[in-house]
Image (cartoon, rainbow, N blue to C red; front, side, top):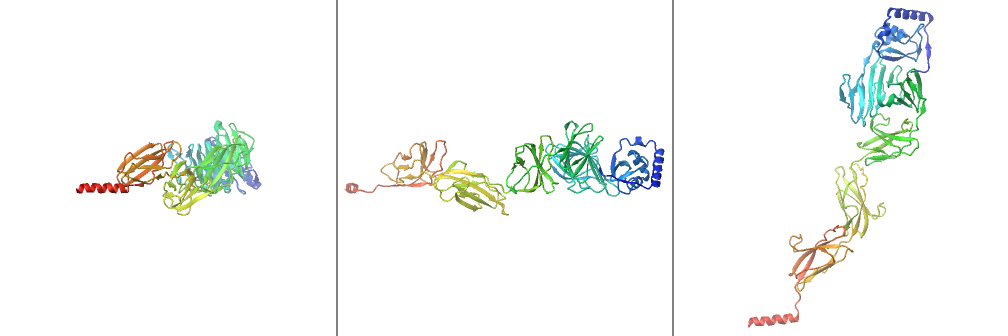
Length: 560
C-alpha cells in the first residue's frame, strides 16, 4: 500500500546471479503454482537495501523460500523489487507467532463464534483469536484493540471475522479481518503503524488498508461496500482497480470490481452540550440542515473516543437521546448521514457530566391544582437516601421571581409561614453530602383559602344552640360534628350535606363543654380539612328576681 516507489537494484553481477538462482529454483519445483491454491497471502513491505533472499532469510522458515515468493509475485529476471512496495508471501512460509486481540468494551449482548462453530457471550476483557468471529446485535456494539494499536469499533448488526493476526520474527504485526455484515470503524489515534506492520480489512467486494488513518467500512445489502475516510488516506482495492481516498471522502464499491467516483462526505454537525445533566434522558437537538437524513451521538469515557459506552441514531430534526447511562463524565461525539448514505466525520469531542443522584424529589402533597385551607401550606415529598438536605421554595408566580419563602431543611415535610389567600407555587431540590444539588422537582401549584370559622360558640340550656359560619360560596355543602370529647369518639351530632352555613341543634344541651368541628365540600366533591375542634360551652341561665321569689315560695311551702 505505497504510492511512491524507489527502485533498489543490486549490481549487475548480483542480478545475474540472483536471476540464475531463481531460474534454477523454478526449474527444480515445477509443481509449486498448484500448491499455492487456497493459501493466504500476507503483504510484506520492502525496505530499502534488501532483496528476495534477504526477505526469505529474515522472515521465512527456509532461506530457499525466496523462490516461492518470486513465483507468486510473478517476478522475472533481474527480479527488481522496490523500496516501500509490497510483495505477497504465503502465510505458511513465514516464521510467526499467533496473537489475539483484546475486547475493550461491550455494550449490549454480543457473541463470539469459535473456530469449532460454538458461540459464547462476549465479555469485556476477553480475547478474540484468529479464525473467530465477533457478532453484534441490533442494540449492541463492541470495541476491539489489536496488538498493533488499531482500535476497531464493531457497530450494531455487524459480523467481523479475524482472518489472521500474528507477529513476524522481528516483532512486526500482521492483521487481516473480514467484514461480511454491518459496519466497523478503524482508528490508529493519529499514530502511524510501524514499517511493515499491516492492518487490512476486507469485504466480499473490497480490500482496505490502514497505516496512520481513521476510516469506516460498511458492508451494505446487495453486495455493496461503502468506505469513508475520516483522517489520513485509505487505499481501496476492488478487483483490479486501486484508488486512494483522502480525508472527508467516501466511495461505494459494487460487485464485479465496480468503484463509484469518490465523493465528499457531508460536513460534521456543529453540536453543543451542557456541562452537567441532572436527569435522564438527556435530549440534544442539533441545528437543522437540509442535507441531513439521520443524526448520530456516541458517548465515550475518554476524549479519544476509544471506550464507547453508548450510541443513538435519530431521524433529522428529532432530538438525540442519552439514556440508561450511569453517572459519570463522558465525551460526546456527533455525526450526520446525508441522503446519499455517506456519514460525516465526528464533531470534536464535547465533555459532559451525567449526575442523577440524588434525583429531583417527587412531591406527594399537595396535589397540583388543589386547595390548601387555613393560613399555612404543607409540602411533602419522597425522601431520598442520597440526600442530606432539601431546599424548598414557595412563590406567587411559577417563574419563582416573586418569592414568599425559601428554606433549607433535612425533613421531607415543609410547613410554610402564614399565607394570605391566593395562588401559590412550590418546588424542592435535594442536596447531596458533597454539595451536589439535583434539579428542582416539577412545580406544584395550589390555591390557599381561609378555612371556615364558626361563630356563636357559647349557648345556654334555655334553647337548642345555633351555630353559624362564613359561607364558602355558591354550591358548597357542609358537614358538622359535635362530641363530648376532643377525639370525637362520643359523637352527639354528625350532620351531613348542610346547604346553609348554619346548624341548629335539635334539642337543648345540658350544661357543659362540647367539641365542634366542620368542613366544607365543593361541587366536585372535594372536601376541605376538618376545622380544628372548637369548644361550645353550655351554661345555666342567670337567675332573675321573678325566679328568686318563686324559689323562695316553693321553699316556704316545703317547710310548712
